Image (tube, rainbow over all chains, first blue to last red; front, side, top):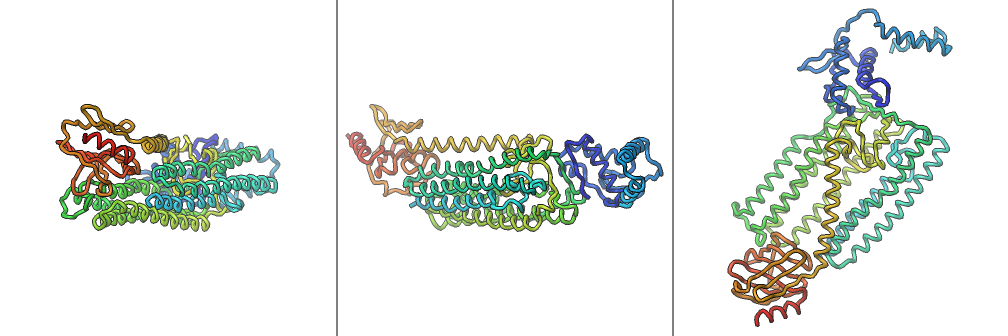
Length: 121
Length: 468
């Protein structure tokens, strides 16, 4: 799985890492139980501070996407916490995206199709 | 003879290297290259207007580089005809710096123009970095046992040379026995192993390039890329060991100074051959994997000063792969990179200063004179004083009668001063001009001196005065 880090982006680097790992898990690019690189290895690879990667892993752990332990490092969780709901922050984000889509003139069917494609992916 | 041999050796090493630099840095066609003067080849460059502009830029700087190359070859030919060894050595040393600087000037100009053109097109550097999560920290190619064995073997060879020099092993080095010249030469060959080993580990653990969306392609490319470089270092470590052992054998069987020139020449040729093989493998690898279409562009053009020096304070890595040439370079914004850059600058300045120093030594004639108490030998800042009352004997003779090896001091065509070991006599003090042809041997109660003035006539006249 390729992760892309944009140093000039408004999104902090640790969030970029977090988001892309979440997308990787969702799309199946990162399988359940799959080993993630160590904090040091990933920070060396991207050329960023170890604390940045550590923060991203910490968030992923708190959110229940990965497990970390001293012996095995970080792994994708075998079973995710399926709350069957999305949090308020994401709801607000979704609201913004839907609003912009409406303003752009896209039809609801096309928008749904787009979501279905993304969902399937 | 030595001067001519040295000149030819330098000529046949330098000229092909310069041709190779020209061919690799100034290609005729830029369209299928990943970079143009160190700036990423982008889809935005493929329209007609850009094509025309880049054609002009590349052709102009290629032409400039070609003119510089021709001039450099002519200068190299001119250096061949310098008869004096010291002048020739200084000339070639300065030539190496000038040649590499000059041939890179059009490249730097091209880099600057391409960056400006990128700005003109409105291409903004996004500073994007890619990482292939599946390969992070997993791609290694270094043959660690082979490298370690080569390094240990090298240390054994040095230890063997030391044991010979300190007479623990009953092997005769002839006039070189006890001078540590053999040990110094062997150590200087094997010390490159000690420097190369950490570089091999750094490269083996360096970040992986992302050239494709496919992790397997990325893994294969990076494994091969690291293997080409680490194989080169491992091979060179074994070559060094072989050369070090060969050096000892040469010292044992040929008790002659010419041995060092043969060893150095052979070593340079081996090095050149290894670099050639390494380059061919690298070109084949890049041809196979790096196509403009497949490459994910990492936008860090602005971090490459003149397209050659990497300076990126946001990048915590110490070393990165070079954009021109082969191998890796340091991130000059990294604390360690800063230290190495300062060290490199000091080395360049020091070597140029040493050239000036050698030039002064070669151009300043040695001088011997006397007063009532002493014979005074003077050359630049060095002065030997021989107390006349301590002189036991003095004789005047022809230099061709003695065979001496320098232990410490200066040994140039027209200046030999310092500690030398004379065949059949042992350690002596030299202060003479070998070109003068004759010498005065002065034996005092605690030292033997071989001195001369700047010419045979002056030496003869001085001896006459001294005898009277």
